[in-house]
Length: 248
Image 1: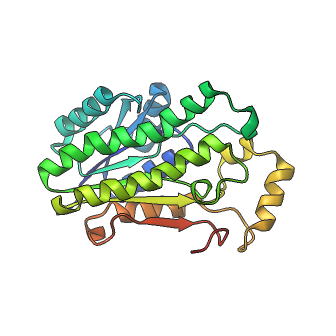
Image 2 (image 1 turned 180 degrees about the vertical axis):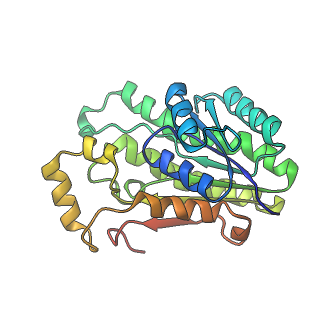
């Protein structure tokens, strides 16, 4: 199967999602840039590809299965097929566990965990029918070690994503569909710098064995690799990119 391929990336208007979108486009993919922030998605799509030939903005609420199905149909109508889904959309809240309200817990879980489940299920059905597909879920170090700079609801949702990755990988493997996760540690992103206080971030950075924050571009390159046809033998895996903070 040769390029160009088509990928949908959720939560792609900014942060790691935007870096991932740029990486796919640079590798020759046709990129669906989806986000609940439709204007932000449109702005990035225009920056990446002003011609609109290989980048398309899509308004998408990841909690909504109908919206996911519509996103698939939009991309398939535009470019003929869809080969990959990157579940990146995320809601992050930093709050002591005893102070998290049920409403806030539900809101974070709905975007992070429910959104990933819906994406895997809707696109998994299409990929199963076409007998080919790649799904990459963005997990987190927080889902493996309980989190040190994030809320318990964020960490729990990311741990759930790792489990969902295994379940969908096992279910879809016989149909040429792989499902993997990437679990980054602290990355050098504006969102990280804005969420984590400077003194706490300095402490976290000093605790990383390699001595610095991670490069989002490298994480994006791992996502692109897992979405490639060559990644047929990787499925159900969680790739750790955390500077040595969590080893297994």
